[in-house]
Structure formats: C-alpha cells, structure tokens
Amino acid sequence: MSLSEEERRDLLRLLEIIEDKKGEQAKVLDMRDHTIATRFFVLANGTNPKHVRALAEEILEKYDRTVVHKEGLDTGSWIVLDYGELMVHLFNEEVRQFYDLDDLWVDRYYPIKKLRTA
Image (cartoon, rainbow, N blue to C red; front, top):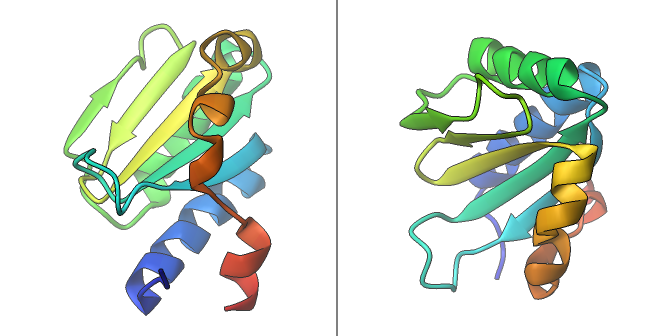
C-alpha cells in the first residue's frame, strides 16, 4: 500500500525532528490495514529520561500538527504523543527493550529508506 504525499511528508518531518535532537533507532510502523485507530506509529528512543522528554518537547514545538493526547511527559521513560493519524512513541532505551514493540509489530515495519526515496 503506497503512502499519500501528505503522509510521506508528515513522517519525514517527524523523523527529521527526531534526528535533529539525536533520537536513536527511529522506526515507522505501518498500521493502516490493522484494527488500531491510527495509521502509523513512529518509534524512537533517547539515551535517558531527560533526553526522551527533550525529544517530546521538540516534537510538540516543531511538528506542525495539533497533538490530540499526550502521556508520560512527567517520567520520560515512555512518552506517547497521539496525533490521531500518527502516534509517536518515545522511549528510554531500557523501557523500549522491555516492551519490545519493535518485535511485537515486526511485520508492520515501513523502511525509512523507502520514505526518503519515494
């Protein structure tokens, strides 16, 4: 299933913000044909809780969409920013490994390289 130009642009913008703030292991999961009420997950992690919060704050400031809901800003271990069509999951390294959404949704992986060359 191909992406609309708006979806591609939105995902690339989020990835750019994450990269600029030195977020690690960014990944896009395509949830469009699943029963979940969002189209994409964007996963990334920071090196510590302060870095995870800084990533979230940077996205909230620079991503040109209104966040519908946000969770976890107080702890910085797992922060979720819900933009409706997109959900951003930012983790502390240990929390990401523990919950392992990467392997849970391995069949949903959307290659970042494909986003950049489309």
